[in-house]
Image (tube, rainbow, N blue to C red; front, top):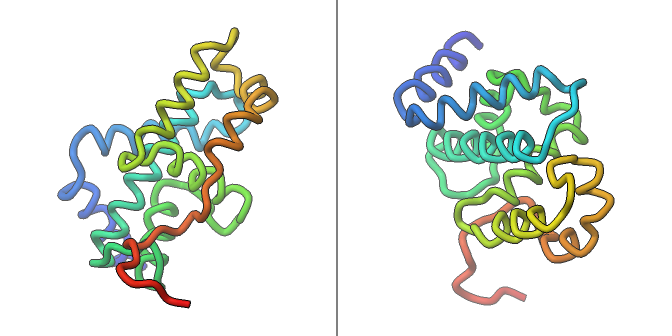
Length: 156
């Protein structure tokens, strides 16, 4: 396990930008402060950090698919390294959903959220956002949390 952790630590140090490492540190602090209230911007930091986790796991697993046992093991180890208990399905789904919103390949998702947020009074209050976000949630509903390369032929 120590060799696996040192592999993760080396990858974080050598393969990530200083900005990505700073995001991971900020998200790690936010995960430790679970009991305290968070505003939307802090939740988005967790989503962006999880996208960093995903990119790193993909690189270490030498794949471009967010599936498979090797990718899953690396993602698990990276999340553990950052103090995230990914055995709890409910807790694991939170960064996954946030990463979906913050996905760099789909900036329209985050743009829709930020445009909607600006229109709301007290727009950084998570409870208010959730209560009033039904139109947004129906617009941003992901089809699947696992994405793979697009199919080039149809299979029936």
